[in-house]
Length: 159
Image (cartoon, rainbow, N blue to C red; front, top):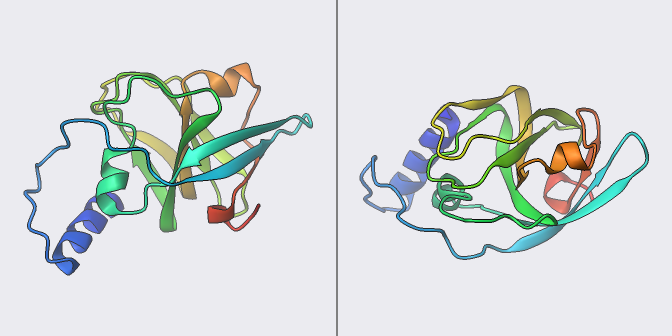
């Protein structure tokens, strides 16, 4: 979370944008550019998603806030500038999510399943990761997606 906050501050300073540190978005952001993403499970199943890519600090900060649904074949992929312990929260998020934390090797390192809407409790990847994938709450259990499964997408150097 520190890296995200510092990134937001750096982008604001470099871009000459004055923004109050405590300013919050008040509604969902428009749909962002998308990319295909595939998860290959250790049991040989393959799942295909179309994920949005928040690239600016504000897009990453807003994420899935205020969105009232996440389709089963969609999500949002947060790609970090360098491996870091990812800490997310559910502030202003009205629906549960599964947060899939992806290592530099493309493997799932941890999953925060069926998160609690609106919770401010930090949800940690525990280990450094290169990306966090937000999916519909409960889908990783329903599809038997687990730690060690492979994630393939162009922003992660694959696909």
